[in-house]
Image (cartoon, rainbow, N blue to C red; front, side, top):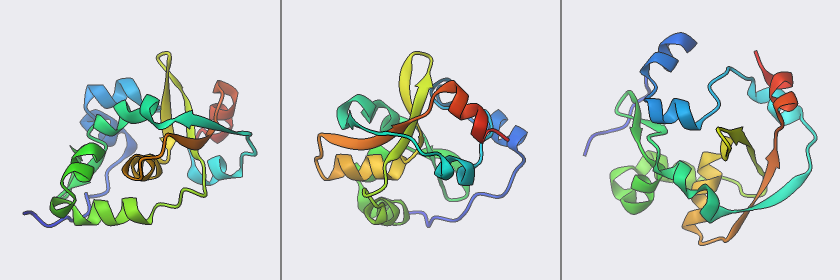
Length: 142
């Protein structure tokens, strides 16, 4: 088992060029600011966890200093091999809704992958979410 370490800092352009096409196709890749996202006052809706599980099968997370190596479903299936990621999933606070938007006609997560993974781990049918429109995305863009 390899020990986890942080991936080195890179520019946004370098990050995008290293991102697998499957992620670029599924996620919002325009830069945005988390603090602006958290300031939005959006209505909360309930989404089916099952409708978002496809996102947990994407290589979202880094491992051993290399980005885009680990799928959240891998962590849930083998938590002993990914103790750092598993600890972060368990620590996720489901009292806070995830943030979603639309990309290529599908609902995708902008912020909250660990909360989604925790909801799935706990067998929850639904998760609370705030949905961003294209206008909302513009207001949080860098």
